[in-house]
Image (cartoon, rainbow, N blue to C red; front, side, top):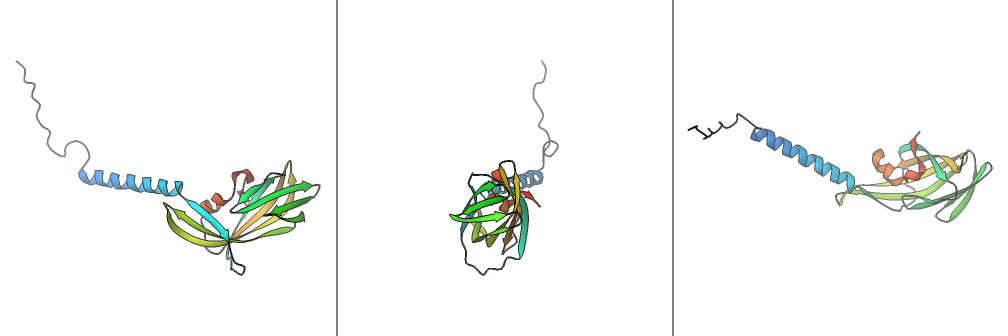
Length: 168
């Protein structure tokens, strides 16, 4: 009759050590929290007071579809092109621009939070410089100036994908 009993393996000869398991658990927890923070990242935009300094600046090349409203933060923007001009409407206020002219949008404040916790507050102001048309889109250089240094990922959450923003 054959012996079918198994001899127990000595501890620590197979598998991971307790320290390695704890380290992997901590790394997994950090990754999960980071993913949740990114998924729950939110930007709440409100009107801001004039007179704020904006020492930080990022410029994007954007295209705004002719006749289709877009929203940046809480500002609703509509453009209508005609030959070398564009009629811009920002929150109901109209202004005509020719190539090279700027349109300054009134300052706003942004409260940035993740996982329901506030991360930072900043004021920002957007300036659009009309460049011309491309097909059915009006092209602009959009300068976003902020009172605090803000990561580009957060600014990108304010810019709708329909604007095809590219850092300039």
